[in-house]
Length: 346
Picture 1: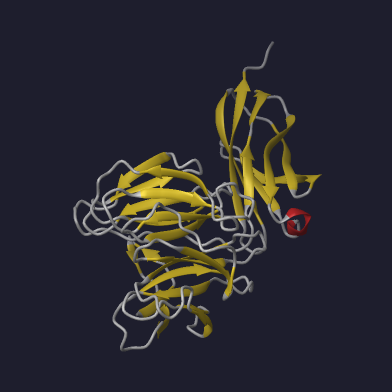
Picture 2: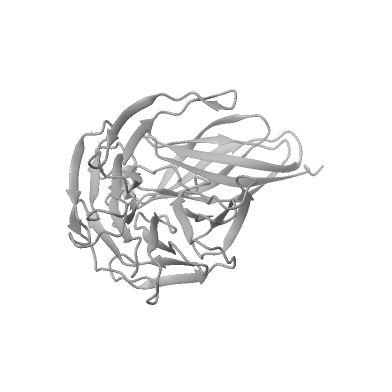
């Protein structure tokens, strides 16, 4: 159960990153492996490492800072459960910190959420009784800061994918995946397109193909790709961790006249942090014609901001306008708007 923490720096297509930390998550004699997740559990603005033990010992979760210093530990299903754990970290209650979600890899599938080492919500049974355990993730599909638990069958040929409310334990949405793969699925979630809403990433368990699938908040598949050219080895997947509350982007289509200057609102952003998140926010506009500059933020109240600027295009056409909202703590949201520029009337 060794864990390594690395920086990543790509040079000529190869990872030249350096190891930042290396430590045993559990006792060196334990050979059952560990599941890992990252999230800002203690609210210091830096992701922590969450490790959950594999089968063969009492299922335990330990939280470490990035240097390997242990912060917390607990037994989510008691000392009698030894079937191995899946784990995820993400914000469930819009406090800007990551809660911890733990699933049982051995049947029956059970899920528990924790704030630190304190239970948060009920013990959840996401699927009908069966012989599969459960993989877990946290997905904020609405961009409110209140993530949902994502549950997927850890074994078996008929995989279910579900979104679950952490507070009530109710299954909000569930689908059965089409492919008959022999060993369940592996899941992750994160904001792949920087619009403030998370997507869900699914890969096959051991024995499956090498296709990675992405699902939206309705659990509709939106894209897929083959990660490798082999069959049978299976994969694990991960997505970059968000630190802090999301900022949801709302793209716009604006109409302008060529060679005529006009003031336009090119995007709207909704900050889950509300007015408290205003400090340091700024927005840059790339107009799609080789020009870019900062836009003006117009507050509409309760964390809602319009981005406004004045623009003159030299010629008619359809332009992709990219509006990027950032702040000093690395929060990021991108609106992909459109400018329709018509010919100036004589």
